[in-house]
Image 1 (cartoon, rainbow, N blue to C red):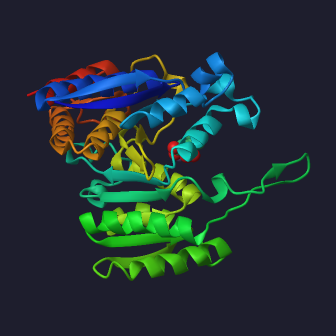
Image 2 (cartoon, rainbow, N blue to C red):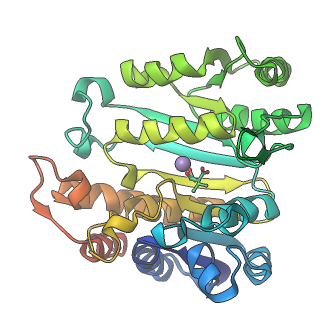
Length: 354
Ligand code: IPM
Ligand code: MN
């Protein structure tokens, strides 16, 4: 029987609640599909600061590197907001991504037909949306040096090397080959030198993928096009900060930020996390939507080559939504019953073990 070591980083806020539901579903799938998951928990973010005075302790990094995959919840909260930058929970997540070499962040936004009424956008605009943001995750302005803040001036550096652009572009073209074979590369080449290089290198990589259609789009236009006509997109290839912003926007097309999963890959071990944050305002109330994390767990099974288990999860979610069960964030007029985080997890687990 295949056995997989999973590093579990629940984090802060709603992190523990949603990860628990994902584990419930994973266990249901594992016993059905005949593989075994062995979980080891490590601290990250605020909860790691409380214990180790460090938002990303070495033990956590080592634990991840010793695993087959990492399942991640969310980090941050008001309790740690006033700490100096190097102690902030967010800095811990960035350090983890960098230490694990996770340069590619894949964020699919796929609309469930059952949820077309949960979005603030018109059903005819969003029905059938199936796009994927491929976000560069360990470079750009998030990590660029020099960076500094004094009382009177502050600056960051948006920097990309040819090599960094090449490898993320390859991921995007490979993804497109598995999908509808279109890449929209998003930049700000009319203003930024870093985007000029981005374009040139993406063009070069494109030569190796003649079957894929490539278009370039300025980020401001892309933000507008995503709302105007999201169905035009297949794979959106972009840098760290543009990808951060556009993926939050994409989540609203689908209905709720509580629905978007992500896979961070490129290093020795993949990390799977919902795109949303720790939502401290609703933590502990049992109203968080666990679906983004459960879908992230499905992406994790794909990564572990347990695709039949991954499909089982996606089918279970669809069935539960079709039956009319909704967490509060997606409870539109056509919801049959509004359920808690835990109830949603249990319903999906039950369906996944059918
Ligand atoms: C995300 C988050 C993080 C990011 C924060 C928490 C550092 O917003 O994963 O999208 O900006 O990458
Ligand atoms: Mn974000």
